[in-house]
Every structure is written in structure tokens, then in C-alpha cells.
Length: 332
Figure 1 (cartoon, rainbow, N blue to C red):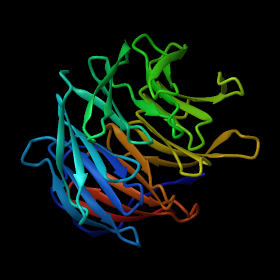
Figure 2 (cartoon, one colour; figure 1 turned 90 degrees about the vertical axis):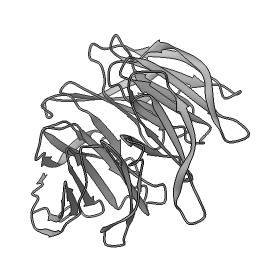
Figure 3 (tube, one colour; figure 1 turned 30 degrees about the vertical axis):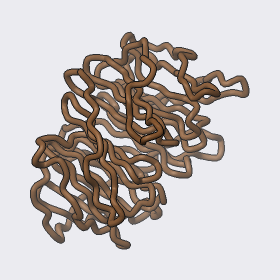
Figure 4 (cartoon, rainbow, N blue to C red; figure 1 turned 60 degrees about the vertical axis):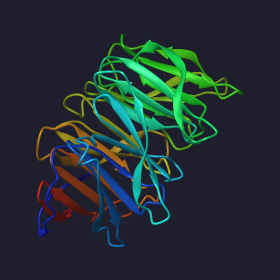
């Protein structure tokens, strides 16, 4: 197993307050960082260096969460009570095209469906909402979700667009399935005691991973579309697992709690085993992202973002944005 070691500051980047989300664009050419009062868009150079191209939401006083649509034309960001939809022009610059009033205290998670027709949101008060894009491209409140999510619950669409999942208020996972008319209906509940704070489907939509207190649970769809528990990863993390992401090929799973980030690799027997660990420099909520081309892996926590080179197991490189410091990091 490789142990991460951050060192060697090579350049500085100023003005990065508390980080709440990180995301790569679908073409892996851009990287977005959502922070306490704005979010920033960077161009990812060939060597992994980041070049700031746009600061968004600064004058509006928001920019906490940020996600890309699959075609890369749209960005969604959140403030406490509003979701903002941003659209790219021909030069790749994003401007606000729509505001969605969520009527809730605080938006805790947002995600686009793979086809871009839906946007889902969850709030810290437990409300889950689905927004549907009309023929004019504008999102409007769609069918109600008659269920409540857990506090800070993640929400996730499967890559094939057939499933929508979120952590239930009373523990476990709620799964909704899409019908031929593109409406979602409650299908089943995966019951267990803890409230999952992170959820992610594998790229082939066959696995669902959930992260809760000290535990990752992996489920697999069988031929009847029932989910079977296939593996528990227990006791490696110390605390709530706030973030989970699969690599684009599905062969690796990254997880993070406030203390550490771990990469798991799938072995020939189908089990995931730990291959890499990085101790967090702080105790803040982490956020993870793999670039769609598989070349980069990002961890954002507190006022720091690390980007590791994903195609090298023995000597991955990293770039660090540390409040006001960017570092190039080698794993020894």
C-alpha cells in the first residue's frame, strides 16, 4: 500500500476560502472548485497544472456546491435557498441562465441526471426535489418525491439513468426507478441502521456504494434488478465517510472521511482492497472527484485541493491549492 506525503511548494494561488465541492468537466479539460463565497473554474493543462479562467458567484455571495451536466454545457451551483443554472457560451464562459427557488433552509446536494433532463436536490431539512428540463431548456419542479432524506445525505443517479438513490431519513437507502415515460417511482428500500452520507453508482450501473459511520457497503444488481450486498469495508476509516467516487473504468473506488482519503482497487475475485492512503492535513469535510479521462484524482478539504495523477500507482503527482499555496506533491 502506498502512503501519501505532501511536500515541495512550487507556486502560489490566492483567495481560496473553505472548499465545499470539486468537479471535473466531462471532457476533463476544466476543474471547478466550490467554496464558501464563490466557485472557480480552472483550465487543466497537460501536466496537471491549473490555470484560473473564471470566478463565478463572487458578487452574488454564493457558490458552495457545483456540478457539471454530462455534456458540459451546464453548471449547477447552490446558495442556501437557491440553485443557479449556468450555461456556457461559444468561448466557454459561464453565465447564469436560470434561478431555482428551493424554498428550503440549505441545499446539501445537487446532481444532474446523465441525459441532463433532470436535476435533483436535497436539503439539510430532509427535502428531496426533482427538477425537469422543458422543451425551452428551463428546469421546473417535477413530480414530488414523497420521502425524506437524511441530514447531509448524498443523492445519486445511475449512469444509465434508470435509478435515483438517496439516504433515507430513518436510515438505509431509498431507490427510485425511471419508467418508459421518464417518470421516477419508488422501487425499494435498502434497510440498515446508519444514515449514508455518500452514495455512488459504478460506471456500468451494476454496483451501488454507500458510505456511513466507519463503513462502506457495496451492493450489486442481480438479473431481477434486486440489490444484493456483496462487500463491507469496515474499520479502515475513522468517522463518517463523506465522499465516495468510482474511477471512470470502475476498477477503483475512492473514499474519504475527515481524517483520511483511501483508494481501493478491485481484484480478480471482485473484492475491493486498499492500495493507497493519504492522511488529511485538517479535519474538514472532504470532497473527491476522478476526471472522466481517468488521468486525475482530486481531493478538496478545508482550504486545500490536491490533484493526483491517476494513471501512475507508484509515483503519483499532485497539485495543491492550500488557501493561498499551490504545491506539487510526490508520493514516496
